[in-house]
Image 1: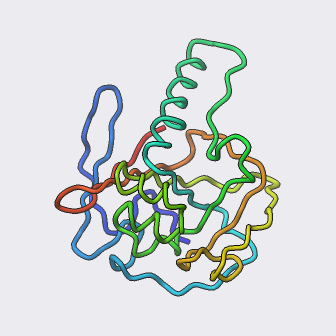
Image 2: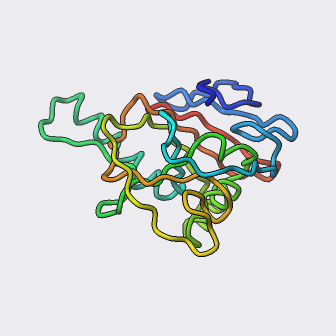
Length: 199
């Protein structure tokens, strides 16, 4: 799996917004954010174990309201020495685990709708990705992780989403941390725009 900090096919001018430097990316013609040709998806086979670096897709509204903003609050609390604060997590409280995929499964995805479709997100999440964009988060696998059984999906092969992406369910939850890479994708009139978000 490629480990470059910059998705293939992107160039990165730097835009400074307030205190944070946000890297904005422009897609080259026909090149998708994580490699491959836009709209062309590899036919993959399921794998029993995930790679050491995995990816999680979160719809934009969920990302900004339930992950990113609580993360900024967490960082501020840590900086001021507030005891007992905990970081936000990548799955909802009470979720069966954290659904993740691999980089190969994201090849060919360009717009937020592409990512949502490839990962077979539910109808509401697909709609929110189309409206609000989506975050693509790359965490490392937790030490001693445990795989939970994937819920059966009618018409899908075990270990794959309904649209052919590899999928694993990590039991428990994963705390957001500043070693993770986050790219935010949103749809513009003239194509997709990508932001590398610092944590």
